[in-house]
Amino acid sequence: MKTRFLMTLISMGLILTVSCSSPTVSPTEPQSRSLFNGEDLNGWHVDIPKMDNDPNMSTAFIVREGLLVSLGNPKGHLITDAVYEDYRLEVEYRFSAKPGNCGVLVHCSTPRALYSMFPQSIEVQMMHENAGDFWCIVQDISVPDMERRRGPKAEWGITEGRKRRILNLTEGSEKPKGQWNRMVIECLGTSVKVWVNGDLVNHGFNCTASKGQIALQAEGSEVEFRELVLTPITLLSDSG
Image (cartoon, rainbow, N blue to C red; front, side, top):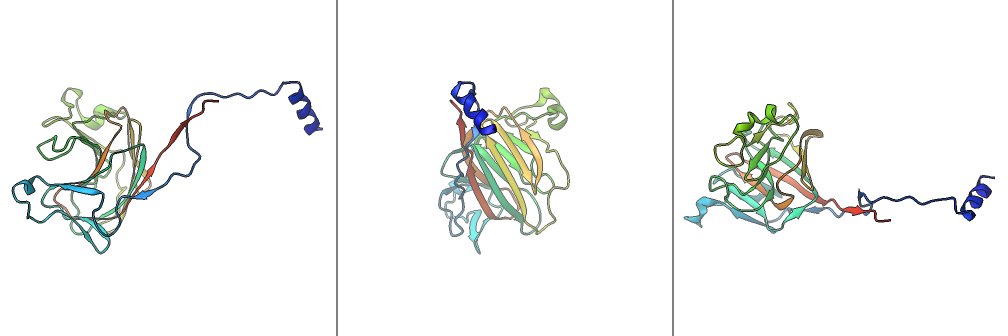
């Protein structure tokens, strides 16, 4: 009876198809790619200011036993050759010696834009016990409860001497020294979300950039990376 009733409605033109134009995630399985091949730094380039005057000095970035290692010094950045937008980046890292400072920079563009060292970008902090903080590096981003997490509005800024740090949302998300941490960074349009070991630790919006290179820091502490996997996020518009 239900089938006969449905066929009757169709023949009478009473079944309508309704569609609307809105972005949806593509049902097509996205193609993940590793940004690190486990053997060399193909696809990346190093920017270490001190090497300008001494190109033969040792670099801060090496491959060791299948891991990408930031030795921490000399200070600088390892930067992808390619530009990326709308993606999910999965990073597995650990401080292999004394926990300290490092970071993943997204939406990188102009090199050495801050303190003649840091590329224009949004830094996702990896510093021990501060993983997931944002640092604005000649780019800006907004979060809820901004004054509590960034300080007085009059002191905000994106250049030297201004309040550029935006505190994360959690405590205790990182694992103890020597254990592997998993950080996931989702960049979608002008939004940046960060998870550390499954906890949502930051969500920024209205970022002043939506694409750029990706960089890893050498900032005084040795850090090992065993996974750097990027998955594009493809949006479709239902145009029915």
